[in-house]
Structure formats: structure tokens, C-alpha cells
Amino acid sequence: MENFLELVKARQSDRAYDMTRSVEPEKLERILEAARLAPSACNAQPWKFVVVTDKDLSVKVGKATAGLGMNKFAKEAPVQILVVEESANITSFLGSKAKDKHFPLIDLGIATAHIVLAAESEGLGSCILGWFDEKEIKSLTGIPSSKRLLLVITIGYSTKPKRVKLRKDKNKIVSYNKY
Image 1 (tube, rainbow, N blue to C red):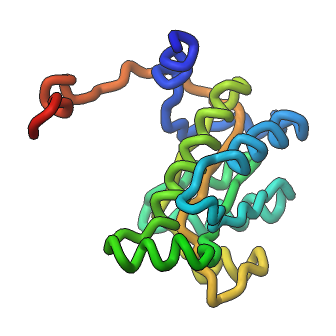
Image 2: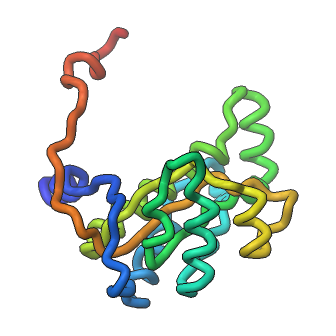
């Protein structure tokens, strides 16, 4: 357990990458395996991960991720993992309706956490991005217009040191047995 907590403490949103250093394919495969094994409601696995490793395409996707002065660093990332929502199975779909919770979004959040923690365990930096030109990225990568591109995860070797995490005090976010 202690090693896992150290991994969680070390993971941060990295916004500067070494453009001269590519991500080794075997590291990327282990990261993607961690995503594939992520739990999901009713084992629906409502995801597809489009992995952008081509340098020219990566720059184009990065530019489509940088808008209104945000996420300019994305075009420096050697890898971008595009998180696409796929259809859930019937059990997850019905459960989502019955409980008024869209389980695929929860599932994709869990898989995304697996990706960034696996990246950290491989010595790589990552950043989860929700601000991007969805239509442009879909056009660049062939994602069907009917699909939802929910997140872009940048991955690469960080050029910045680790930061101290600022988090709320435990007593403000945790209670036992009652709210």
C-alpha cells in the first residue's frame, strides 16, 4: 500500500515535455494495458483509446487542444491518448437510467486515472485535458462524428520538477458514518 501512495503523491499534471525524447513502445503498451484492465460498471468497458504517436499528427492534435491561450504545451507532448466514449452494454445502460447516473462517464474517469498513474509508474509525466477543439481532433484522427471525445491525455518525459500538492485537509473531505 505504501508504494501505491507514493505513486499517487508523485503523479502531477505535467505541462512541459522533452520534445527530443519519445515514449518507449513497451512503456506505452503497459499504460494501455492498465487502462484496458480498469473496472467498469457491468463490465461494459465503454471506451476506445486513440493513441497519437505520429510526430506531425501529435503537433496538429496539440494545436487543436490549445485554445484561448490554454494548453499550449499539448503540441510538445510526444504522445496523446484520446479518450472516446463508446456504447455501454445493456445492463450498464439500464442501470444508468434507473439510477440517473451516466456510468460510462464514471468508467472513463476510472480508466483515465489508471492511465496517468501507470504513466507515473513508468517515469512519465501526464496531463488530463478537457478543453480542446473536439471537431478538429475528430477530423484529424478519424473519430466518427457520432462519438464523444471526452478527454485528451498528454504523455511524455516531463522537464519540470515535482511540485508540492495542495489539497484540502482530510477532516474537510472525510467523515465516518455520517455526513
